[in-house]
Length: 116
Image 1 (cartoon, rainbow, N blue to C red):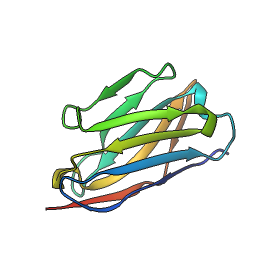
Image 2: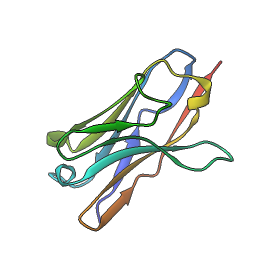
Image 3: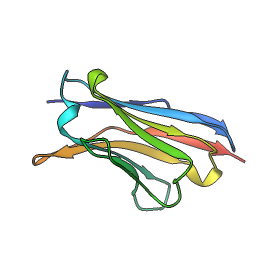
């Protein structure tokens, strides 16, 4: 069973940056799948933050356009999320989601806290 491990979360001041990574436990695995980052703040529904297709096409939530950048490194089996100009409203648990061909995988999450 493949697992996905997120890293890179933490506490940052408003206006700062963080870089999240999601690594698959099985080699040569992630290239076949669409990769996404979702987030869930306390008392709110989980929402899609960014998506990257197998061909590298990207989509972003309106609230993160121009500030966040999703990328993939198939050789390293990793999906990344670069977050710049962070705002207190970005505070949430961030989850990696990888899916395709009837498969669906979620990571355990990494906490991002932005102080004002």
